[in-house]
Length: 479
Image (cartoon, rainbow, N blue to C red; front, side):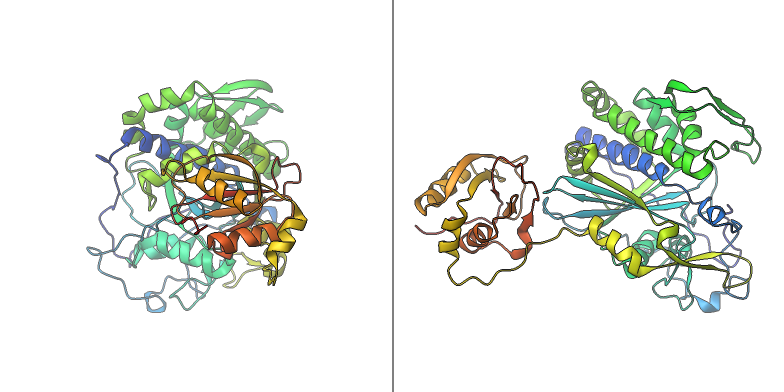
């Protein structure tokens, strides 16, 4: 792949966001590491960026961005902005309960390169539902043919980050990439993390390496080195402990049994191995102790609009999501409607939005229970005989106990009272685990909870039918 800039696009001084001197720096560093190591490893799982077109039998052509006539034509792009005044991507607030979706971008930036605009080597969406304790990972092929906001001609999605940075658009490449994903996939993107390859090996080494069970012998005589040559890679079958350099080769080599599909399986092994290592009981104090080194390692290797506190919160949340609650998917052949060459040289992939919609909705949207218009919800509440748990998701002591006393006075069967998993819930949340819609509706009406905060837990084996997590907006109703 060639990420070189074209001569008629102005260069800009490198813009790097650094975080230091903030309260809770050790926890923040752990959050940075967790997001970078685990999510970047997940990114490696789906780096089929050089392989998607080959999988379809089409050539994988790199090179500079081209317009339909084969040249980069500035007359068909927005006028460049002011390189000295590029506003950063706006950081969104997060209440701790809403679903969060992050666009993870990897750029194949080689050490020592001075270019300031790169195509994305890979794009992946990571979504987390804090209430349902579920997550999803979706890989986006780089050759997906899309509308790019502000540009008249369609182009590959990989060019969005390049164009945003090359033309100094508001928010630069990350904002244009986020906007492009939202426009073409219909997925709301809250945050981004953009990272290069240079930190990965060091990050793996800092956690002491990873353990994998290699399913078959690997010998890749054409594994690329750093300088456009070859660095042959061999790994025997069986249990292996991999350092950073070997882990990267294990995840990225393509000349193996199963080719691209075998590669995806190995990359999934890397993801789970990193996750297991980071979440092991003895790693937490080690990572906190290495926080200064982690920050130094990552400095200049990533940009993000997540704050340190948000990254730390996501890291703590992610560790509580079990493997079976993490859904992974790739926009692959089954979601592609057409493969063709708009300019006669480069193949592109056209999304079948109808087929993709079902996958998108299952991964990125939390289904809400049907909205009920009930004239006598109290009577139907009694008929459901639901068991209710009240949890305090705030720092206000005794809030759950007082709310439970009120509910019991109204005839509600409150069986459990306690604290939530954290104390920063901004909004009250009601989770219906076993299908008690009238109880959930009555509780929402009584506590003035928004319909969007009534969630379907879909767990018939739950110890309680309905859980109420009190947030900072909770105000006890008058008796």
